[in-house]
Image (tube, rainbow, N blue to C red):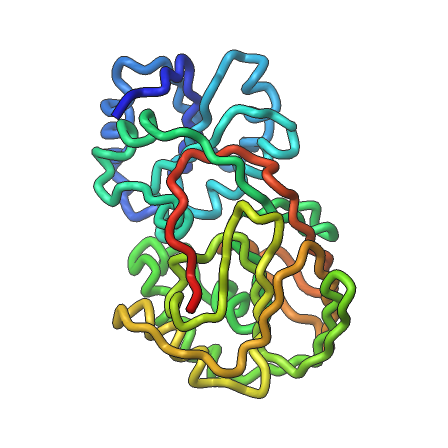
Length: 306
């Protein structure tokens, strides 16, 4: 596979992501970058990756690699879009959740990631924006059950169990049974439902139960996919969790689904929200899609759908 010739690469390393605390993963990454001009910048408690992305282009970097989980990649992408830079973003999967890397076809063997990155052309991808919190997201924003599960899952549990930590902490949340009266303004349509969960997707082709969902999720179409769980479909939510664990697909019957460019959501009571695996606040919230606003290294995967 021919290399694209990146001359100077910035690696933003999150040392608290993932399960390795020995430093071996960082050493392996440094070894893989041998022969490629690069700087590794460690994201510490008092540093902000946006400070680095703002000046990256002026400093001569032509590629940024975010080394961490989905939250790390999202934070770096936020800074890049905010700075208005055109250099591409790549991923070195390192966290307890690496959903985006799977969506973009990254190798599962860490030793293969850097050579693979060097041979891929960047993609012009959509990115979402949460107006009230002025935050950009790559994968999803969700409210209700999923956000409550994220709130209840500690960093230590994710480090120890990986994505299984969400399953472990998810079942108590399911049995709490919080319900909301929500109003959604979806482009020119207004709908009201009783719901316990909603999700807005920008990526989602490898979502658990993917082929069972009536979706056509694409980060290239200028639209976001909105799903609302209605009428108390407890077993539908269990199916989503079990789908990942058992590697099976479950048909979900009570999901309302829309593709839109803008969404305004209110709820009673207020619904907690998560963005790309991190808690961000609660409703009301306004979410918009920014069409092809960021360049990401990867390969488009097969879309979900019937």
